[in-house]
View 1: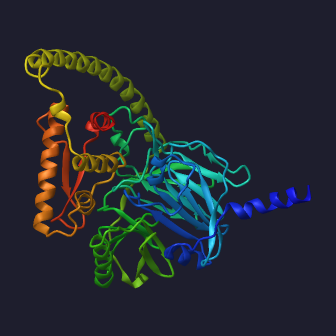
View 2: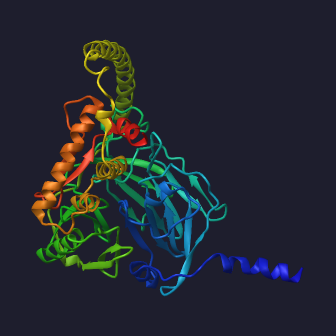
View 3: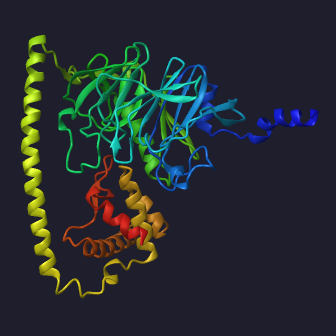
Length: 466
């Protein structure tokens, strides 16, 4: 009996093997202050910081968010409710699970942050659902509690989404990205929220609309003490409604860090502000930093958004107009939906009749016969696209195995494979349009990134399952 008791007490020590934390995590652990850490969505085939063996393999690449507060350093595996705490120091330790949740699939692309000793999660998406939920981790019950807000605005991390946490006043600022809660309604976007600025007060759990964004957004890079640093090399101060541009010295350092990332086979996965500097980190490759002083901020003397102030009578009239407008819109939408359904059915029957002599007798296998390289490339671009990511040239080169070739050979190989794949996919979905599209990268207009339009997701998924 005595031996059994000893074994029970030793089990927690046996279950966890200590490890050396990545360089940037060691840097964060060594700091005595709270740290707000932004996690970009990890791209295949990047391995996560913490490999969770009892999760389905598909969840291993959904991204991991980090936050540090007075209670320690915590990791949330996105797509799940799991919360892990680092036990140890900057030299050695291990991740211990601190939650008891089991539900998965609701908070992909959400944002994790801390205020005081509390941990919050906001927004995200799941199966057919895009949410604007604010969740707070309950350390006693070891699970997430959703907060009842007066209004819910769908939000998740995209290239156009940004946020700011005012830890002093306990406010969360974010921009409307024009989405609808139910993603199964493919052709509907709630454009009324697009580019609006909202604020959630974490103390009284109320959401308020501040105004319409009028500045140049760019992509979110990191939160600084003065506002949001964006890819447009500006600081957006949502608390004081101001925009600053950066000094030439800081801009040159930013370009250096971005170039350092794009020229190698890795990209920055995390950013955070600490010790008067912006840190760009990769879990396997280390980190880089840029020092920014208040003197590097140059006021542009223009607001970030136009405030909206309505009198009580205006609010009541607006509510009445909204109700009547909604009723009329519902009637119009219902009729249009019925008409569209009728026209689509008529068009479909006509298409079937016109193609019956050429398509139905044609060997179907020809339309979907793709080789292993094409299949691997299609899987990569499709996986990135369903996670709202663009596929980079370097990732495509990895699939094609031509990283060590000359630029011209790389370009020709990419063009040949993508053109061949597009021909087969267009035949498969019966369209004259290309399925794999491309757009110029934000930081380098001479380079391209690739994606698949969401309207083809179902067809591509069925092809890959075959």
